[in-house]
Structure formats: C-alpha cells, structure tokens
Image 1 (cartoon, rainbow, N blue to C red):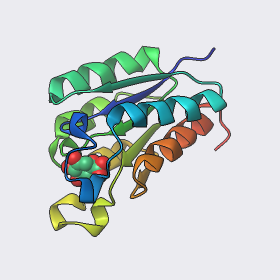
Image 2: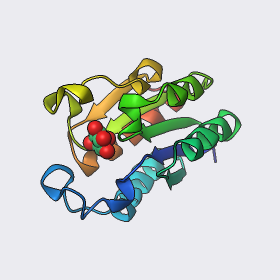
Image 3: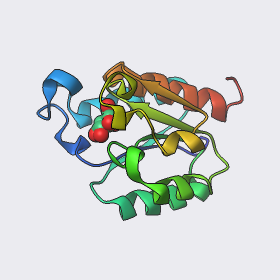
Image 4: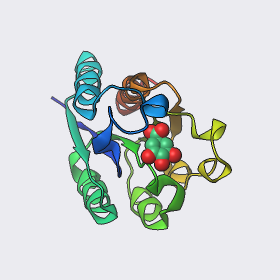
Length: 148
Ligand code: DQA
C-alpha cells in the first residue's frame, strides 16, 4: 500500500450538515469522509482524514504530511483566504496538493475570490458539494500515481 492521501479540513467544517445548508448542503463531514475514502480506495490509496478549527493543528498536520503522505487534499475553509502561515507550510511539501471547496468561492463575496492556498496547489476543485472531495481525491491519487 502506498502512503495515504491526507485530506485536511479547516474551521467550521465540523458543522457540515447544519451550517448554512443552503450553501454547504446537508451532508455531514463523516459522510464526506466515507466518499473520500471510497474514491481513494478505488485508486489503491488509503485516506487520513482530519478536521480542526485551529490553524496550528492544520500546520502541524501539513508538516507531518511531508514524510507520511502521497498527496494532499485540503479544504482550508476560511483560512484559505487569510493564512500566509498555511501557505508557507504547504510550500514545504513536495507531494501534490489539491485545494477543495464545497461551494464555489469565485461566485460568492469578493473576499473569497483569493486564496493563499491556491499559490501552493496543483489545482482547485470547487462548487460541487461533497463531490468536490471525490474529484479532488481522484486528482490527488492520479497525480500521486503520475497518471494525471
Ligand atoms: C469553503 C469556502 C470558504 O470560503 C468558507 O470560508 C468555508 C467553506 C467551502 O468548502 O466552500 O468555510 O471552504
């Protein structure tokens, strides 16, 4: 088995399913995890799936991924729009990084149009709800297998 794909989730995503359902839907984060795991397995990868409301936790996990992961999918949530520290830690990675959002930030408020994370990502998957994670995991798996 290759090293797993890390799927990291930023602040407030623990409330998926009840948080602004008109934007983020009613699927829970646990259900999203299942979808991500199933898609990863179909490409021969396991998933390490984590969520934190704390910037430092996310940075610690990104640093851990330097040696422990084949690829990374990250939904940085609000930190994507604000955190240079998250960008700096992502820039230490040599594995492929795919940025993922449930909603389409480009079609929302102006302040969501820019993400620092995109500067360190191979690409973004946005706007497809939970399917964004399936597509992002597939992209990460293909990149990690050099099949992209
Ligand atoms: C989000 C989009 C962000 O703009 C927002 O801050 C989130 C969720 C998404 O998945 O659509 O918390 O990352």
